[in-house]
Length: 341
Ligand code: SP5
Ligand code: ZN
Image (cartoon, rainbow, N blue to C red):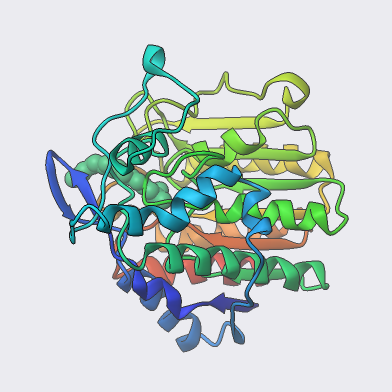
C-alpha cells in the first residue's frame, strides 16, 4: 500500500490544557516519524510526498471564515506582542451562543474552538494545510484505482468540525478527503472512525447528509472525551437521519466486544454501497495508550484491517490519534497489513 507523507507536520507541536496545566501536547511530531519508520522498516510500500491542493478543497468541509481564521490566527496573535502558543480562554456555550465572529483574536480563538487542546503556533497553519494535502493526495490514489492508500496525516483531524478546532485537530482531513471523491463524481462515501475518541467533527460536517455515511466506535462519552457527542441515539438529522451510527463502548473494552461493534458498523457501511471508504485510523484504542481506556492488542489491529478489507471497498486510511509512541507505528502498520492481507 502507498503511504502519503509530508514533512510539513514538523512545523507544529502545540501546547494543551491538561489536568489544569498548560503542557506540551501529547500530539507530538515524534508520532508521525515513528509511524513513517515502521512503514519503511516493514516495506509496506512506496512513500509519496503530498501534492498541493487549492484551499477550496478545505472549504468543502469547513466554512470560509473558519479557514480564514486558521490562516491568519498566528499573525493576529503575534500582532498583540505575544510569542508563546495561542489557546482560547472563553467559549460561546449554550445561551451565550452567537453566530457573530468577534473582531479580536482572543474572542476568535474561543469562537472557533471546542477546547483548549488545539493551540495555534507559528507553524500550525503550514502543518495543518500539509496534513489535509496528505489526505487529499491519498484519496486521489484511490480514485485513480488503488485498493487502499495510507494518509500519514499529522496533525489529526476528526475533532475539527465545520467551524471549530479542538482535540489536536484543525482541518478535518477525513472529511476533506470524503468531499474530494464526491466532487470528483462519487455518489456516496462512507467514513468509519476507529479512533478511541468520538469523531465529533466528522459527525458535525455530515450530520444532515444522506450521501455520506458516518460510523464511529469510541469510548462512551459519559466518561470519555469529547463528552458531549457520540451517544448511540445520535443518528443524523433531517435528510441525514439514519446515515450516522455511533457505537459508544465501556471503559476496558477489548477485542471480543470491540469486534461486535466493528462488524455491525461495517455491515451498515456495506449496505450503503459507497464508492469509497475513508477510515479515521486512530490507534489510541491500544491497551497501552496514555489517554484512553480500551484494551486492544497489537495483533487486534491486524484483525481490524482484515475485517475492513472484507467489505471490498477502496479505502483511504487517514491517521488520527494514538499516543503510545513506542507502539503507534506497529499498530498503525498492522492495520494496513491486515487490510492488504
Ligand atoms: C485526535 C485525538 O485523539 N484527540 C484526542 C484529544 C484528547 N484530548 C483530551 C484528553 C483528556 C484525557 N485525560 C486523561 C488524562 C490521563 N492522564
Ligand atoms: Zn483519539
